[in-house]
Image (cartoon, one colour):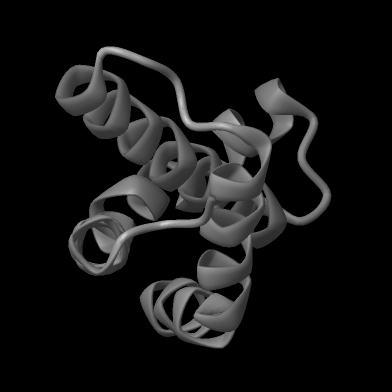
Length: 98
């Protein structure tokens, strides 16, 4: 089925909000003690995974609340595609924050 224009717009807003949150999300991982505790070799990759997962979870929650049903596989695939298309922005936000 794919995402509606409205749903796609909401997903873009969710991505923008996550990009804006990245500086606060990455701040704790500047502490070497925390990085060691989590056994992170590449904290930026971990933060990217957190951002990706947060975007997808937030979108799924929005969708489920609105439609009283989870997004189907084609909608999830399209959401992942939209996130992937903005991956450079997300990575730049992480790099510029760290």
